[in-house]
Length: 161
Image (cartoon, rainbow, N blue to C red; front, side, top):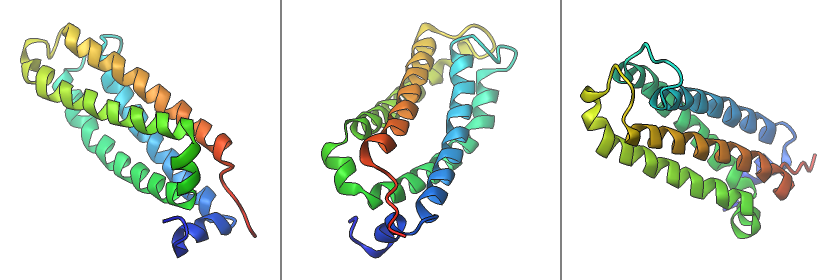
């Protein structure tokens, strides 16, 4: 995969990798910011005056749009050094595992806890909601830290020009 023309171009052209990386980071900032707003509400720390349903309805479209951009840019970055990232990069593996766990945490929340939101929509969140918010915060902090660490352990980017 990394020997295809576009991944090779990402590695070799001076401004291509940093441009894609900037897009990835900016999209990730939107993902993390919108997720943290909801997580802090689920923990009962912030946004307590807003209903959970209102906050989720307002942030979820931004979260998914930004996630799609971040994932697309991340995939492009990955393809430029796929062998190194996949075969020997512990931070990359930690990031991917935590992304899967964050997705499972979100799916469990939306399937098990969110259907009962009418009971706690305006008030203090249920213990299960607090757990989901806390797990989400922890996982996304690890994802960001591991993602930052990836660049130091893969030698990314490589510039031939």
